[in-house]
Image (cartoon, rainbow, N blue to C red; front, side):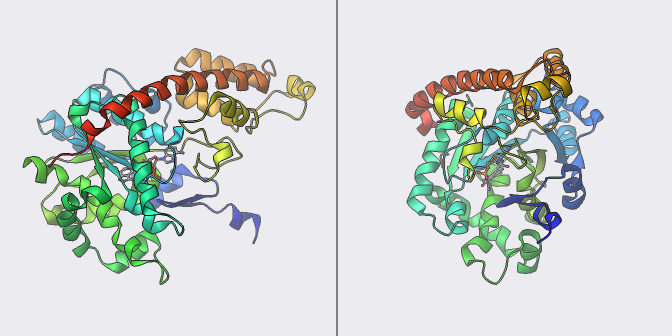
Length: 376
Ligand code: TYM
């Protein structure tokens, strides 16, 4: 295998490999870039741009313009996002949820949140269904801890709530051929049947609102770009079933602390989990890949490279809202005025402060999480 093969980009809902070329994904998936004009249209309703938009973490969409046009003419929308619970939540997962909460507040709209314990069971060889279900509950605590409104947030636990989903899943599944599913998801002869049917289940919350309320409105889905293949097939059949095509707003991946790649639970030493304790965070950050040089003397002389530094990405996307302070950090790094140890110590402090607060809220969430469970 050549180095080029090894670095070949693969982005599917179940696997992300190689260096991710986000612009190429826009081309290959057929999504649209978020233009300045569209951002301004959104900002009219949100009192300015959320940090994740201003810093271009969210960067692509499908039909966001259509949803905003409808909204301006009086048709609301619902939000939909989710999680495949197979372990603890990391701060990468929080990225689309934090943004979803912002949209929920600004547009005063409902959120349907799908906890796909069934998905993780069918796709992972050694998964145990009861474990995935248990993580569904654990991960819901993280969602609730972020401060979503209970009256407007509806968590669907797939295995428990399948009766609510099944009729729509059948309508969807009947209209998608195996050849479309194979081309979209790369299914093979060895793929199990559960997995092949499963994408119909992820489509359901796009349409569920009508069944529950009688109101036909579009769904807007904030998620990382890896989930887009689901929406391609769902959009193809939406209108045949009498629904709006679901719209999306896609983010890039928050990187892990290692060289290249997204933050991923399968690489725990380079992921920061919401349940991590301060000493663990310190260790992980201390071992992170930075843009620093081999020795302090070299770094003082030649400076560091914030573009490739994982630590800098966390300030950029999450922890430094002040543009001036961010560019000053960048300038000092390039000029060799600031060493990696200093940035690591600061990031550890920021992360641990955030996590301490989150963990407190997560404990409190245990008392109220039931209120978020979708009702019939
Ligand atoms: P899952 O559990 O793989 O991921 C949950 C959400 O987190 C996003 N994500 C990331 N975002 C930023 N940086 C990262 N490093 C990162 N890693 C993961 C994912 O894109 C996702 O939005 N099949 C889904 C569950 C699901 C869902 C949905 C997700 C069901 N319905 C609707 C989004 C929207 C899954 O396994 O997500």
